[in-house]
Image (cartoon, rainbow, N blue to C red; front, side, top):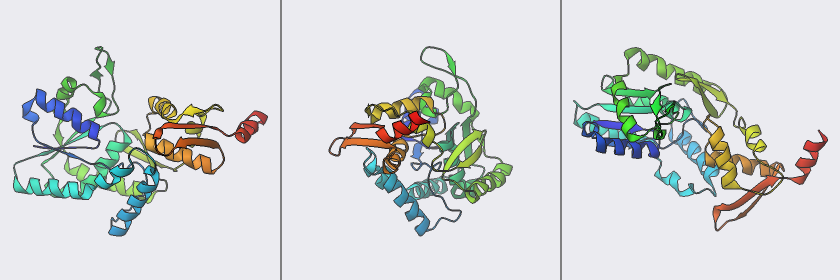
Length: 277
């Protein structure tokens, strides 16, 4: 059995679940890029792949993840998965998806690579499904890593083959999305995605900033706790840097310490403008 997930945290959770249920044992493959954000092309070429890599390099500059871009090669990951599926024709690949744009975009992106194995590709989509948290309460997770390993085992009953119609319709849905404008992709429900402009979250991010110096990590934590539309810490920091260039906020850091001691606040000019309005 092969497994495919879209976040490192999900891979760790799945590994814990395998310890509890050896019937799930198998190699775990991780798609590391976040296809819910940034430039994409209908036809992937060396040029478009490099353009996307350059965009991510700019976004991650100065973040704790700056060096991790060198670890991202999803095409190579899928090539390895394909080779293993060819070598063992009776094996299946299980795709594990949470109800979020990150996972759903990743699902759409991999389909063209896995179509030769139709019939052997299973999908498990946690779409509006209830699980128990540590206190025994019911909740509806948007990401797989929010689920307890023992609860995660229940999800294996959801495994089903991607249907023939899905192999036809889902790539068309992805093509429709790529034909639209915008570099932020949001999940509206089910597997329906919509495009939004790159500044879609800016107002929400700016509202989290006050006129007093605040730790960047604290601002990021507050935003992530409230937002369910795919914000990430690196994206928030990148948009804040853009606001610095626009004169909306001030940024104070020690480049040798990274985000830990970085502080942000609204500029005085911006506060005066807001007060006058």
